[in-house]
Length: 132
Image (cartoon, rainbow, N blue to C red; front, side):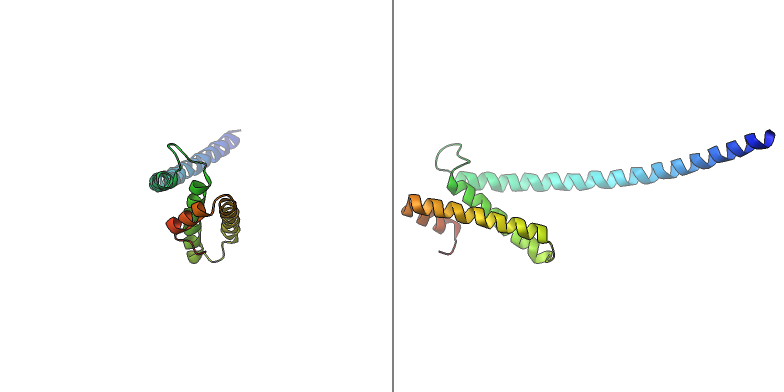
């Protein structure tokens, strides 16, 4: 019986060692994840500032966020960001598909404004610097 007890204690100590090793590696990975999330929040704050500037530049009235002009301006900004991303990551087909969807949405909104009011369409094109 004494032999069985000794074996159990050896197994238990071996488990404790592996547990302590895994705890050390987990704490290192948690530190890395925290640092990565800090960077992401800073990027979001920067993009939110530029988003607010775009909205204030293209809004038709105070607090306007849904007018076609504002939506087109936001889509244009996103298109520029995605095209820069795709220059670096040529094989990212999921982002490429998203880019094509945003381009289609912007194109449809531009057609809507063009059919509603030609002068409004022309001023928007000039402000955004789009070809047409």
